Length: 326
Image (cartoon, rainbow, N blue to C red; front, side, top):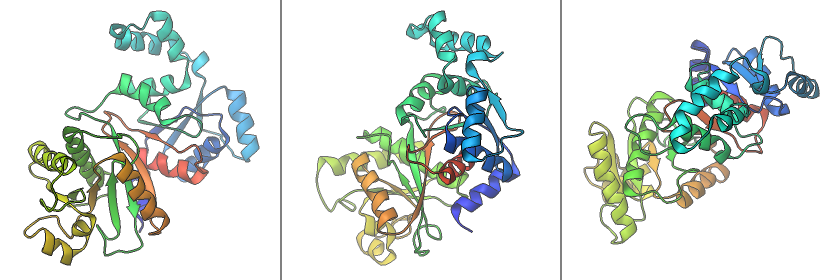
């Protein structure tokens, strides 16, 4: 069973309420219907009811039984505005500004998650990552003990000898351009947690990647990764984590044994932490486009689950992301 099928099975066993702020976007409406029909989650569409119905007709989607909430006319608007004001007044947000923001579907959806009226949020079919991350960081914030929000990519590779039966978790590939050593350590710990809790990986084995393996090269960039390894060990001493190491040393047993003797991770890593966003973004695209891997993105580090889509996403992409969020 593929990783996304395993995630869908987990979602079916415990239905969550996932809010979709782009509720009148045609692909989103079609995905909500597919999620409901598949018994994958309880979708909530935000938007004007007439506009949502028009998008459903365009897609030939039956949205009967799906909750539709118009933030501009919601009975909860005043409650959300008051809560938002309390959360943000120290940052200079007035009551009037809070009321305006609470009527915005993105902020309204984030408030639903914050106040427990939804379990998670998915957006990005028309909004940018920043459009969602900004209110999420302002309102939901990072989870306790986590210093940074980042991403993991679940890479389902055709070569089942790699990682965990072909599954590799890559981080960070879309959020933090140039992480500090401390941020890199937090990304590593979060990626291991993603592998364990989302993908069911019993034993995450984390390799922090570099162009050097165990001091084979001397450079400030290598030193940053070495510092990140030390910090990550202090954050999660029970975690199988090692570095710095080159990609081949992380994945290939013979090379790992040669370059990093005695490492508990070398040659059998299933979580790969890239030193910066350039490397991570290039790495996942090479694995996807040349290596033929299926890939699924997830944001990690927030106190409650919110996930982002590509604006070129398909209906299937939205369904998958709803399941990952659930």
